[in-house]
Length: 208
Image 1 (cartoon, rainbow, N blue to C red):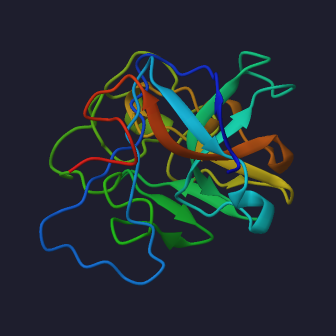
Image 2: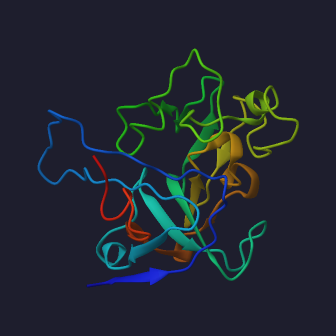
C-alpha cells in the first residue's frame, strides 16, 4: 500500500547505494537494515506513504521530481542520497567526508556506512564507494569540474530552509547537488523501496 512504480532518469554511470546483511550483524529495534542497490535500467517501487507521516532523514535514498530544478533534465525523476536539510551548512573535506554544521560524517553515520567505508589510502574511483569529493580533489583525477558549489574544503554551502541537498554515491561520476545545488522539499516523491525488475540478485528489498 502506498507503493507504485515510477520512471525516472538515472545516469548510466551513477552507481546508486547498495548494502547487505553481514553474518552476525546486530539489528536494533526499529533500525532500517534493508538497503537498496540499483543500476541503470532497474525498475523501482517508490514508497510515497513514508513521508506522509515523517520528513525524509539524512542518509535515505529519495526519489524526487526534476520539474523546474535548474541544471536537471526536466519532467522526470532522479534518485539520490539525501545528505543535508534546510538550514544546514555543508562543507566537503579533502578527506572526502561531508561536514554538516561543523560535524564530520563518517561510516558510523546512519545511511553512510558504505559511502564512508572506503580505504582513505586509495584514490577516489568511479563505480566504487569513495566518499564525496570537492572540486579541488576531483580536479586531481578528472579534467572537468564535478563540484563547482564546493571548490575546496573551506567552501561553505548553505541549504536554505525548505530545501534539501542530495548527492550521488558514485562521487567521481555523479551529476548531483555539488553541481546544481539544492532543491525544494516539495519535489520529493518518496523513498526508494525495492527493485521489482529485472529479476536478478538485486530483486527485492536487498541482498546478502
